[in-house]
Length: 91
Figure 1 (cartoon, rainbow, N blue to C red):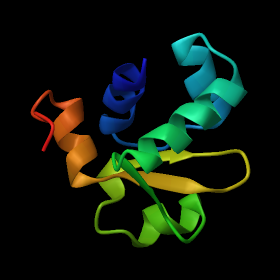
Figure 2 (cartoon, rainbow, N blue to C red):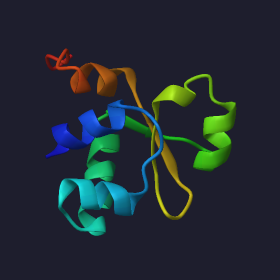
Figure 3 (cartoon, one colour):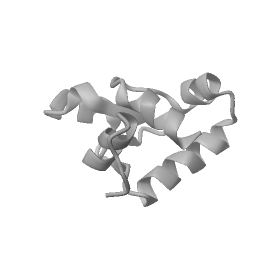
Figure 4 (cartoon, rainbow, N blue to C red):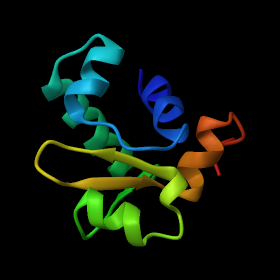
């Protein structure tokens, strides 16, 4: 299911936790856990500013990934983008 979340996030834009949960058919707590897992595996990285502000200022605004209801935002790392495209072979 992590790969499904990665592919969803790789489409760009912003996604609320509740929207992701609905799309994936899981609870919001599960989405939070999945995001934590993707961060710890190096596929996502947290942004240090709110999603709204980050997307306005980021040169990578087209790949802004997931914003939570608390204002936290994440972006796909290069490793995450490769994995979402099926190009990540463990490296």
